[in-house]
Length: 146
Ligand code: FES
Image (cartoon, rainbow, N blue to C red):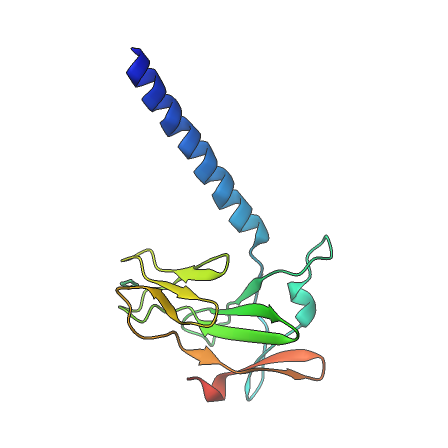
């Protein structure tokens, strides 16, 4: 192996380690919940946002049998939340949550935590649902999607 090959192989190995660490970190920090279905939508406990270290998660993902796609609920602070259907508006592929954005592996569209397109080819914003506090539970109101 010459010097050039050694450097190239070393860089590839480092990138693999960095990507692996990043994937593991995102898996550790992502919280999934099923929630509880009622006649208006899905209830989730706000405590689901609290980590074992008593910090706030930026988002949780709700997967319920009644939903064709999961819903990503972002904690916007000051008691505000956004709930976004994780369905890409380009061609309907399920999105991945990554920090403050949702990304589509199919063609690279990206959306912010309010559902606005930040990277095409998608042109339309994500479907969103109102989130309200009801009896100390967060209600994702599935009747009022936009
Ligand atoms: S389906 Fe998501 S970018 Fe094409």
